[in-house]
Image 1 (cartoon, rainbow, N blue to C red):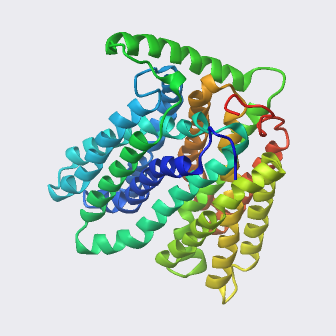
Image 2 (image 1 turned 90 degrees about the horizontal axis):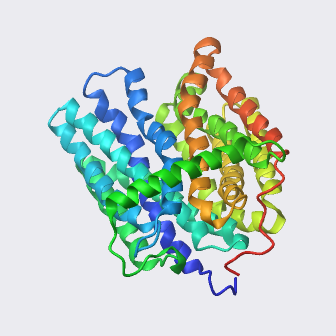
Amino acid sequence: MPSDPDFSYRRIFVLGLGFFGISIIWSLYNAYVPIFLKDFALSSFIIGIVMVIDNVFAILLLPYLGALSDRTRTRWGRRKPYIMVGAPLAALMFALIPLARERADLALMMGTIITMNFFMALFRSPVIAFMPDITPSQYRSQANGIINFMGGVGSLLVYFAGKVLYDIHYSLPFLVGAALMLLANLAVVLLVPEPEEYKRKGEKLDLKEFFRKTTEESFGELKENLKDVFSSGERSLFFMLLSILLWFIAFNSLETFFTSYAKFRLGIGESTGALILGFVALGFILFSLPAGFIGARFGRRRTISLGLILITVMMLLAIQVSDSPNVLPLFSGLFFLGGLGWALVNVNSLPMIVDMTVDEKLGGYTGLYYFFSQAANIFAPPLAGLFIDALGYDSLLPFAIAFFAASLLTMQFVRRGEIKASDHHS
């Protein structure tokens, strides 16, 4: 247990509630909104486009909003204002989605979805950047493990309880989900103090002047951050972000098409395919806390590389057993192991990114992390779909293996991002 007076596991668990709330919203959104959109006789292609709106907002807004929150100074701190505005408005819009379905109003449905996505983007980078704000470098992997664990619990809650509520009435998961997200983020605002140096006390805030000045400065910072990525010399940040792009293309292609693969290639039904994916989530949740400690103990790059090797071996074995009569237990076991590997990768990657910069740029670098991971989520479905159209569902696992293996290769060029020897908090 850390003895650092500036670090508290309890505080990180409370902060993790923010991620818990965000995960509930996205899990419900991905599970039910495509079904609602089918009511309007939209093609799957159009539904697919609607479902990447959140990724487009993430690409356009998260790096900017992360940098903007770095520059923000208010009496509440630099991250909380975004949570205080974004979370209630996102919750309201999310709760209105079933109403739009009831009214059978496509314009209302699209307006609600787009504004909800905008407000979710408004506070996602600031709530994640809050973690390194209050966590010394040597505890960031463990803290990120806790936050990912809380996110996983949110997803599993949707997985089990969402169905029960949905069967009573389709609006209930949305109303309960919106309320939980609101309460979770209220706890973050009330119970997690921001560092004093980011607060501005006793001054009246001129909002117009604040946005003009901070927008100017944060665009400048965003340009600087992107320059950091492509600057000559030591390229650790570039290779780290490239690795993130590659492994998220692999993961998202599986997430998007695995239920179809289960049905059309394995012949086991799409709901059973979803159950197998649930074993990835289960492995991830159970290993997200240990993954942070392993990263802190043995080094983050080494831990991520081990995770990528584990996932690649697991998927090669999955190809070998895809024609077995015992495909369900074999795939479930292998995907559970894949979830362990995914925890090793995912829990240690954000701390590597933020430990490549100074505290003044934590939000901007968090935004870069999301820029590359969300870019992958836009590219992956159409790219994997092209391979499936051309070569059949047998191409899905080799496609993902190729991108996981490529990310393992690019990780070997990363030289920075380990725990900092000294930290301003300690």
